[in-house]
Length: 171
Image 1 (cartoon, helix red, strand yellow):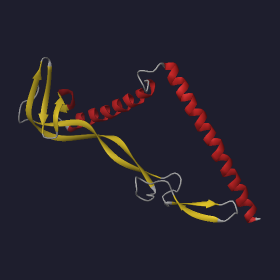
Image 2 (cartoon, rainbow, N blue to C red; image 1 turned 90 degrees about the vertical axis):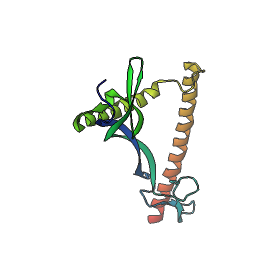
Image 3 (cartoon, rainbow, N blue to C red; image 1 turned 60 degrees about the horizontal axis):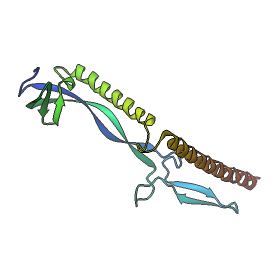
C-alpha cells in the first residue's frame, strides 16, 4: 500500500466539458437567406436549435479533457489484490491514477484522455446490434448510404437551381 489515510496526493482523471462550435450553416447569424422560386429572397430561422428554443448560432458537444487535483485520501478499500483509495472528489480511484507530484499526474491525465479516444474510435469496429449478423449490418449501412446519397443529390440539385436563379436576377 503506497498511501495512507490523510495523505495529500495528486489525482489524475479526465472530465467532460461542454464545448460549442459555430453553426456551419448560418455561421452564428441564426438565420438563412432563401431564394424562392420567383427569385425573391426571404430570411428564415436556421435549424441550429435545441429543443423548443429558437436558433442559437452554435451547436454544443461534449469533449473530454485532462484534469488533475490535489485531494486527501479518506478511505482505503482492499479487495483481494486490488487496492483503491477514496477521496472527496471521487468515490474510488486506483493507485495508478494517484501521484506524489502534479507533473506526473498531468501526464497520466493526458494518457487517460488518449486512451478514452482510442476506445471511442474502437466502437466503430463493433456491431451496433449484437443479435444481428455482420451481413445484416452491411445491408443496413448500405441502405443508409444509398438514402443519404439520394438526399445529397436532391439537395445539391436544389442548390444549383438557386445559384442559377440568383445569377439570372443579377443580370
